[in-house]
Length: 370
Image (cartoon, rainbow, N blue to C red; front, top):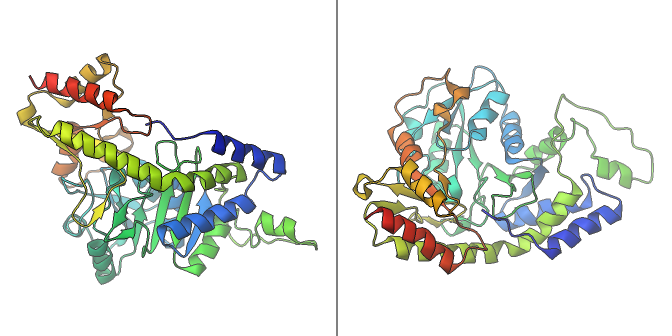
């Protein structure tokens, strides 16, 4: 991945520095409003990362010790870690082979009376079936947190991912289409939750630093609860505002490159690339390929050959339950998760990728297939 950053972003960041207001301030507020509008949410609350966004979502939902939260193991480890931050227990559910996402059936298989929330991930930008999981969550009386870290620009049922969500967490890490360097966002339609999220990210203060400094009269703030320092800077938000204007173009370009990958890979037996689900469109944050036995070469050997040819591919999405940090967890069977993390790899896909690059990458894969 190579982020799309240019002179406009550099100028916006410099303008923020010259303004004298570099911490959380007016640019953050504008970025929140414009991002929330883009994804069809009522409120946006900018934070320091998607991990902190997930943490705050769980705090707002009052999840804590003794509670269970269903999560996919097939996700970056931060998804499960956020559950441990609040003292709750992550319960790993399996995923769908085609999308890499939780389904109603896989969640229901591990749900218990102690389940207090589900964190479903739009994995790699591929939207999960929001209609099905939201309906099931309502029926179970279990809140659904959407980990939309990779999903800015993806759609489900004709709407942007995030529209109609109870609460969603977003990432602006450099691997994402829309980046602020580091940073994240929580979106929700609930004004009371949004207000509390703003307090939680800023030490529990009842009035923000920006509002305090904007007042003509002295403001004596209060600290309403033990909270956190999860703020975004105005420098980051200035970059994010420029990036918002690029998002539609970036998604269109990546989908065109992904379509070309599909055409090139179609003649190679045993390679199954990720595709749009029937109910939505992915932004192709990641273009992963599942290697079936018909291909005849294992994933690690493929990665080694690609690296030798100058191609920076990487292993597929991790499985948290197989990492040392979760050796104390004994999940139920997760055959699809383990298959995907063992037998898939992620191919380069970014704005600077050329057709010659794609031809070279697929040429290596074709040669390996014999």
